[in-house]
Length: 292
Length: 286
Image (cartoon, rainbow over all chains, first blue to last red; front, side, top):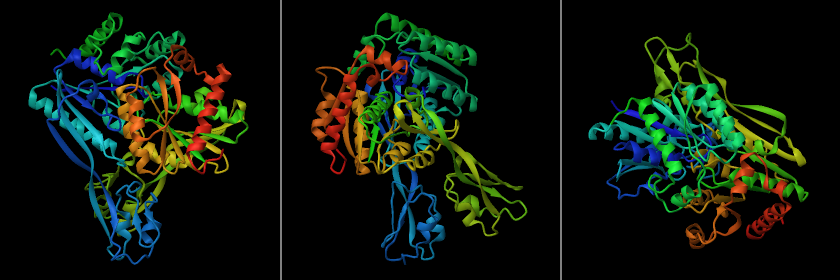
């Protein structure tokens, strides 16, 4: 059985990628899926030459043929994304176009066509802990959720093919489209937070997000000794909402130093950070019933 | 003018820079608006504690099918580019969270069976924080994927006569681009790590594609670390401000305090950065 574990945080910069990398080191061999497609960073910690590149077309964009266009203006009037620039010749702003097709529906001159642009690429590489699939959104592409979904499909296919039982997903910050696409259907979400007012506030929204989609969750408090009061707030809220706080990682300059040199955590961070990471890996293993 | 604050990577200090810059400018007597466009996780208000004075709902128009008129022909579902409609043997199912509100289905329906209703996807709200700083934020509903319409509405609160400081979210996708579009300049807040560098590259390219000039703020800065600076030199990006890596600053921010309130020298440093931005970007007031 293939299990899917997603690491999210709400607030950015709390340590998702660091914790994901440590879990890869502790739970591998597995399939790593970098679903932070707007800022993919796992490959920096686990560099490898690409074995495979999949170019994917996630959305289509409208184009207006100036030969056919008689400048009636219906397309500009009906486009709700203000993507048709109403000056002769009429043009479509591809950064605003959402590919809905309304301009084509209303054009009396059949001047509109739709091109699927390469909206993203997925790269597969090999890490010491299993294959890594990295999604990367093309500039100006809005369909980050679709790319995430595709990365996850490829990751599951690869896991099945290689007989690996865990897909570890590095999610993106926020609560919107890419996060929802990373989360849905996962067996467990790991919420990485930190003791700051911002992170505590964002954690509330993430609690609601995982509960909205019915995904079981556990939490990890990173930089746990940065602010005692905020740390306590995280502990209390986790208890109240029934999300197990499975690890607290103290703030240590050595961790920052390891990251500055693009070194994965285990083997490069002090024992007082490594130990809770091991505890976290065991807890996750147990929650997932994963005993590779 | 609109001064956007972005950076690509999360947690580099975008909100720190936006809030402290806005406070510093306000103390200088400028008309300032601080707009929090990180609508998935807006946090600027935590540092400002504003009293909200106004609020509007942000809705998109989603289809409502009249079963009396619908003959289940399926034209609506075929016209929908997002898979938000499915026609079964009995009815048309609408998946509202997939709908972009384009109106294509009602245009495609030959029987005029599709009307529309509002679906709330978020709110915008505005008010004054201490120090009479005008501030606003967008807030996306939980479970709602599309942030851009909320950001667009928030941008309707931009005052062309004021300095509008806009805190954009992390990433380089649709929401950030929606926020950034039309800005006079973007402060890219980054950190001297390979992650900061990588994501800065993506963010600068994104701003460039929108014709927005990037200037860099180095946060959590360390002496002697120069991979990010080398990149900036190579790309011709000026570093207009450096904020050192410091446990004291991290602790201060963790409790929701502001640099400019702790130590007046920070006000001067933010104003210095602001003056440099004014020098570098033509058309920006001095």
